[in-house]
Length: 433
Ligand code: NAD
Image (tube, rainbow, N blue to C red; front, side, top):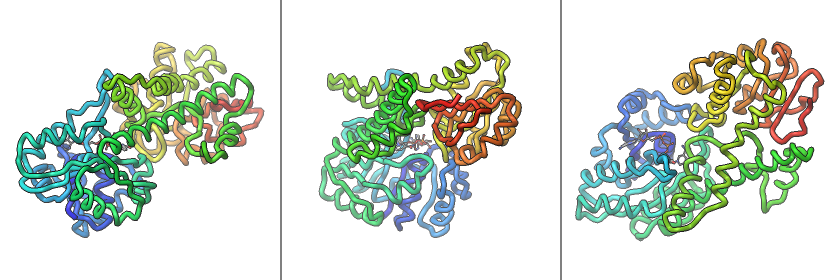
C-alpha cells in the first residue's frame, strides 16, 4: 500500500521506515528542509540504533522517499499518517497547532478517498477535530482513524518491528480493512477498537508507566529513610506477576518528549470534562522533585560546593538516544550553577548528545570526550544516564584518578561498589559510605 507520513521526527521517520521495511511504498514528508535534504542523501538526522541501515536499504529498493512537498505526498498515498509534534502548552494542555496545520494542508490537497491516521499522541476527540477541518475543504469521502504509537526512543526500530500490540481506532469498515491490511505484515497482535478508546489508550499507557516510576521513586526515598534497599524491594514486589518487574528502576525521575507532556495532557483531558485526575498530579509532583536527590546526596558529602569540580556522566534523558528534551541532566546542572552562583566547575560527557547539549547547557560547562577526561581530578562523578559505556567502566580502578572518589549513581546502575576508598551513593540504596 502507499503511505504518506507527514512529520518525519522520531515517530514519523522510524515508523515510516518500518512500514517501508514491511513492503509498503512510503513517502515521508516534513516542512524541515534541512532534515529532508539529509534524508535524501541517506543521512539519518537522529541517533536511533538500526534506523540508518533501514533508510539506506529501503531507499535503494525504491520503497522509501522523502519530500517537503506535502501535497504531492498526500496525492501519492492511500493512507496519510500524521506524526507531527503535540507539545504541552504552558497551561498543560496539548498544542494542536501542528496537527491543525497538517489537517488544513490535507484538506487543501486531497482529491480522492484516503484514510487519514493520527499517529501523533493527541487528546480524545482529535480524530473528530481533523475530520472537521478536512471536511471544510472537500466533499470527497474519507475516513479518519487513530493508530497511536508505542515506540521508545533508543529502541524505536526494534519496538516498531516487534511491538506487543497495534491499536487501531476506527469507525468505518472500509478503513478497518485497509488498516488491518497495512499492519498484518508486522505479525503483531492487533486490537481494533473505537477511535476515542484508541486515543485514550495511548495516554493511559504512558500515564501508567510514569506512575510506576514515581511509585518506585517514592519507595526509594522511603527506603533510604528506613534503612532498606530499593533494589531488594523492587525485586520482591516485581516477582509478583500482578506487579511485574519492569519499570521498577528507582532513579532521578522520568524525562523525554513523552511522559512529562502526556501526564500533563491526561490531567488536562480530564479537566475538560470536569474530572480531577488527582493521582496523576501527584505522579508529576514526585517526578518534579526527584532529580533533586542528586543535589541532596552531593550536599551530604560536600555541604559547600563552592569551587568543587563535578562531573556529569550522561546527558540524554535515557541511553541510546541524543534526545535532551526534559532531560534531568539539564535541571541538575542548572541547579548546581544557581546554588553556587557559578562558583563550581562542571564537566560533562555523553557518548552521543554532546552537540545537542551545546545549545542548552550553561556556558560554564566544560565538554569532555571520554569518561576519563570528565572525572580526572574531580570531586564527584554523577551518573545521570546509564549508557552502557558509562556503566561498564571499571569504576573501582577508574575512580582512583578522581580527586576524591565520590560516585553518585542517579540510575542505580553500578554494582559491587562496597569499597572503603569510594563513597558510593545510589537512590534508595543501602549506601556504602
Ligand atoms: P518530533 O518533534 O521529533 O517530530 C515532529 C516532526 O514534525 C518534525 O520533524 C517537524 O519538522 C514536523 N512538522 C511539524 N509541522 C509540520 C507540518 N505542518 N508538516 C510536516 N511536518 C511538520 O516529534 P516526535 O517525537 O516524533 O513526536 C511526534 C508525535 O508522536 C507526538 O505526538 C508524540 O507525543 C508522539 N510520540 C512520540 C514518541 C517518542 O518517543 N518520541 C513515542 C510515541 C508517540
